[in-house]
Image (cartoon, rainbow, N blue to C red; front, top):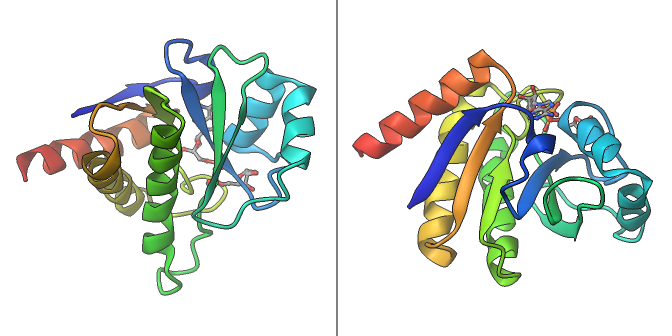
Length: 172
Ligand code: AR6
C-alpha cells in the first residue's frame, strides 16, 4: 500500500492527479489551505464550485484544478471540533473515505491530502492524524489498493504527528 508523507505546500504538488481541499460547506472558498487552493487555481475554480450547491460534512465533490499543477481538486468538508462528543471522529474518517471512493470511481491514480480539520476547525492534531492514517488505510484496502496517497503537511508539528501516526499504524 502506498502512503507517503511530506512537508510542503499542497498547491505545488505537480506529480499527483488530484489534491484534496479542506473546504467548508459552502464550497465558496475561505482561509487556510482552501484559500491557497482558490488563489492558485484562479477564479474558474470558484465559478465551478458555485454550480455544486455546497457539500455536507464528511462528503466529497470533484472539480477541475484549472491553474493548479494537478488535474482535479476533491473538495471535502471536515468536522468543526466541538469537544469530541458530536460525531467528529466518524465525520473526519468519512472525509478521507469519501475522497478515496471518489478518486477510485473516477480512475484517479494519485491523491494528496492536507491535514483536514486541524487548522481553523481546531481538531486535536494527534487524534486527527491517527484517524486520517487509519481511515486512508481502510478505504484503500476496501476500494483502491493501487491508489498512491500522499499527505502534504504544512509545518513541523503537523508533519511529526502524521509521522508518528504512520509509524504506529505500520507496527500493527
Ligand atoms: N498546503 C498544505 N497545508 C496547508 C496549506 C497549504 N498551502 N495551507 C494551510 N495548510 P485549514 P480546516 C494546513 O484551516 O481546519 C478554511 O477557511 C494548515 O496549517 O486550512 O479543515 C475553510 O474554508 C492545517 O495544518 O482547514 C474552512 O472554513 C491544515 O492545512 C476551514 O478553513 C488544515 O487547516 C476548514 O478548516
